[in-house]
Length: 135
Image (cartoon, rainbow, N blue to C red; front, side, top):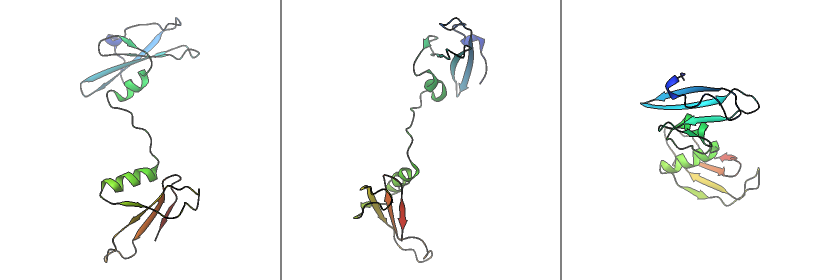
């Protein structure tokens, strides 16, 4: 981040304290953010490309730009979706989860491989808590 005097739209916050501007430059795009120096206020202000001040989603737009924020997925859900994208088919499992008694349990049957006989051939996954069983 660099300080850029050209992006300083306002020098003072609405509370009267000075603003400290920072600029982030990425791939031909420049985004500016100002923090109020008053610890009790803490207002975050951003400048849009048009040179106007924005309030609300300022920190999000400063850090991510035009990239939408992705919601966090638990590791077992990332495994579930990645395996599905790779073409593996999850089927409903007939038993509830032994850890949380959740009913969202799935199973994945894997083809046996002669060169790796110790690999699992079945995975049971609880989508609620992430408990995993292999056979």
